[in-house]
Length: 408
Ligand SMILES: [Zn+2]
Image 1 (spheres, rainbow, N blue to C red):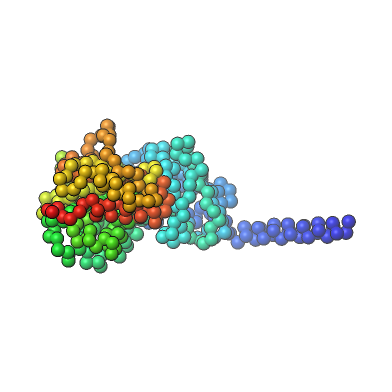
Image 2: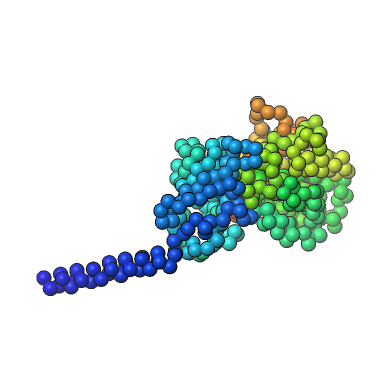
């Protein structure tokens, strides 16, 4: 009997200690509050409203894209402090179009190392409301964003970091409506023996700004080109990169649009760029592409980078070309370079009814009669490294398929 009492006393003491510790934690304000969340940083979400429901449980109501009341803005935000020791549950609601929860999100303490977080229900079951649960955070500041996020400022920092290379030139073609620079980066090694007009020319773009995995795929291509492995390709090709056609988007959470609310991949004018009728940024980029096509080094292949579900899925708007093998040889090269199955077999794009050649893949294919690639997928590739690796494989396949020079 005495022994039992002792045990009970210890238990009571322990419970009291736990309760008092919890109480102290509350008293020192350690749990998250609405004011800890910031929706207007470099990764932001215009119009998002947050409301506390219970301890570390919040409801977020998403805003919508300009002139598109049905198109939700993506859930990008920062916890500016106070996160350490707290977990977090978010009930998220948003307008229905392009479901807010079609893709995974990521969280990070430093905007560099990202961890995937997955929706509880998914867009097939519940496209307008869903739940994200985060683990107990170990640091006070946390960033959250769509897919594996990248802000415009980080794209600009990346361009600045590669610019010193003698193989890199950066053209600022104009400003976005929000005043940000519109960049085209060109990679070619001037010291090679092949004249500019004999080099293969590739043009790589990203029109949908919230499809960040596609941007990492392009960065993987650039990193490969600038590596030792890419030297031969660099010396017999010219590669143009437009990493983000709508640079005002990441700070607003816009998924597909610019400040005018124009779907950036329905913005191409196959009959020619039109300053009066075309959206602002698309006009600047299309006019620039038309000038490249009129130069002594016109584009051989053009790529539009996107995301949809599954692994990477490159689809061809194909034009037969005597200077290279049949496209199925290219398909086989990719397969051989991809032991981890990051990329589906290259295939021909089936005709899409419903809209004309207004995409940045069908449009240039029709306007210039060149092979273009709709490079889709990667919604199921959850890390920056794997997204970049898929890009390295694709650019290496170009090096192997487009052998020699244009005039060999
Ligand atoms: Zn897209």
